[in-house]
Length: 594
Image 1 (cartoon, one colour):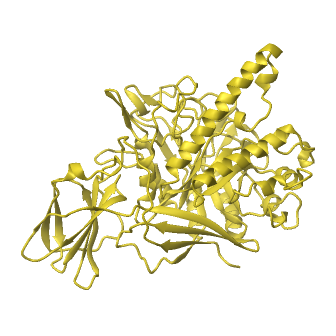
Image 2 (cartoon, helix red, strand yellow):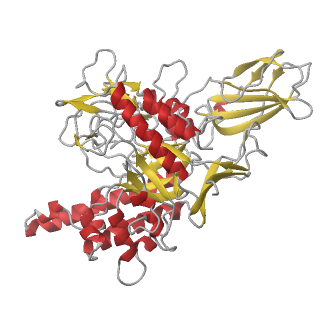
Image 3 (spheres, one colour):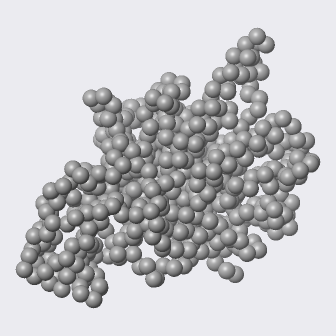
């Protein structure tokens, strides 16, 4: 059986990477990559032109230095230091005859480069930086029978330590983690962010509006939770976000005028995902298109008196227009970043009445026609902006959808054929025995049974199980409940990576979210309903995390998650507590796959 692979084709091309005038909160001052042992003299770098090192509103904050001998062999570095007007490189070997200096944004994304000759007589150097060809990534999927290959092409100038000849083809599957670090008493349903915790800080009038970097990133000389490093440590290569928007809502849930509203950038987060020399993370971005964008008839319209329905219809049109413009603006911005692997046009906006009525038997109607036409339109927007990023949706685990979409409409291309801009079928699955219902051969309702015109690989956009059980009306989180879930991870992820139709899976999820239980409270760890098939017998929406969460510093659970002087996490930010058996099981599954 041929393995799924990612092909790293290393080309040089001038591919633009988006930037903004927002102030970013990144990291710098840390060493990364495999640093060679050094000993020798001290070199002083004079960089008096820092103010001129600006590119499309962005400035570098970190210098990556490497030294090469006369034969071109790297004998020093890479060493990363904060970018300053005067910098010192310590213990540089005497064999170094040339320095390559990369000027990095947010501690890793390269904007400029300088080549400096070194001789034994002069220890003070004045590098002259030039703009580099910016990195970007192109993704494509090729097929041989039911075996699928994900290809990743990296363009732009590369650090010299990149093993250019060694990484022509590297076998790899998507080993993902769903990441939504919602603090206690925060809800992804709430405006303005609707789950977007990944934007850059920015200045609004005299105030600086802070982002949530203390949860996921690195900041020089500041203690952070650094979730991204926790994800990397598991061997993951991909994270899935549920919201990452160019424009956020107003705080009251209304829609701002996009011509005057603040445009949110996400460079710092994406740079920190991408810019690790050893374990870069690709980012699968969800655009949280709401039900109004997929449902032809909304209950609130039906509830109105006839004389009020035109008003509701006009309001609906305004909502759809705003979200569609936001979809376009978000993809235009984020697709330019090499960390981004692609986009989901929605998450679970797929009720039976409008996507697969009557158990998939139909008939076709206005609701289903509208649902699929909207999905086709949104996929077309994504691919029209950048055909080199992946596109799909995150649908429920539903054989009925496969049956319906492959049979209707009665005339012309079937709905699943119309979704030609999709690269994969995204499935949120919670199977506990096997994946026959999803990719079982010769089984009606299985993606494996689709005709060639509709067949695509399957990406498990969610796969996971609660680590919690119940004692009376309370959740419990014990070694026994964690062991049961860890056992399920071990068995089911083995089946994922053995099946050639799967591109991989994104574990649901990184940490518990206390807003998720229907009818529950955002500040209480709520119990869910029974589910005999789950490892501990319950569908606890708030217990799926690889990490549990708790308040820090004696803060009450009903305390605001925001800092009083601006957005961002209130100090001390929530703790995440590892469920080690789950983490160990997922780590073993990821590391078993090249």
